[in-house]
Image (cartoon, rainbow, N blue to C red; front, side):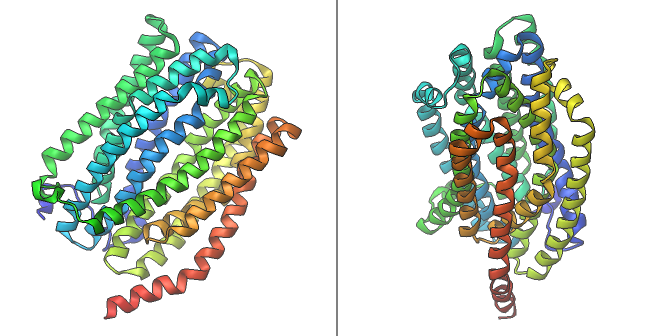
Length: 456
């Protein structure tokens, strides 16, 4: 493999924390820009069309997450196989893994797009979408789902680049498309007055451009690792490995999102003001969560490469240091929300409604106060996934599903939006306790086996 012609980062040598943070920073910037897609929709739509339009966009958020996370979860699982092959310096398996990843991604995404468009209206009815925003919500989510292929293709191309240690190039394409997305949002909503349809179309167009740019860059600069014609003759063992890892990741995410749909169904009954407050708080929580999630994801790439290279001692050392960084950030983020939460809500939505701001700030404080717990949860979960231990992370997601069902049944009807606000933080505590116990119970077995295999 001619590394001199490609931007490749081998994480099996060098300082673990330095490698992880160096890899994470471009990913973090990219993830933040990716979130600006939704923030731009909220800001432009809120200022031009008012709170009802924000509610229409927000009422579909959990449904869209379910659809996209099924595809992107599969993609993340495939990426683990690609990363492990790269860490083991198995070029043949690397190319064939990318070939399998491509075939499975396209097929599953086309099926998901068709199903989502066919069953969209019944799903929105099931979610108790308020009648006065129903049509706006339906057209917004339909346009977004129609462009799902562009989101998945970008994530696939970016996953391949990240598997070989290149987290910068996907960032550059995201920045370009993000700037374009904001410009198109303003043009479609404010100038042409296309409403929420224009906001959705702007997002899809920007995502499509990022996918095309990333794909062209990958083909032009990484031909040595890309599959040839014979690599598409996929073995049953490789397909099984890709699907098992992909489904484990997708199941984990989709179990969570199924809970979120039930959860949002109960929340939608609380009225338009609460939906708007929930939408505003979720936008900010998602942005604030990016450093935690990105560092955990960067660590998983480090873990997968070193697991493939049979270097478990580096994995243990990195996990301790990554947890310290995550905890420090979590405390700082919570402080920012407690001091400036109201200003952030008003800036994000453009709303001056006191009830909306009050409820959004309550949600922010409940969530951010338990970010330290979330940081431990994400680090443990991604580490176990990257080493191929899939059962505990999936089961932890079942805990989240159960908690959201309980919340929709008991907490939200009795406590209102306060019940909505405390559900996820309480869930993080239960999931972290479970994953910590699971990790400790298999730690000696995981690292012990790897050390014996290396010495053999």
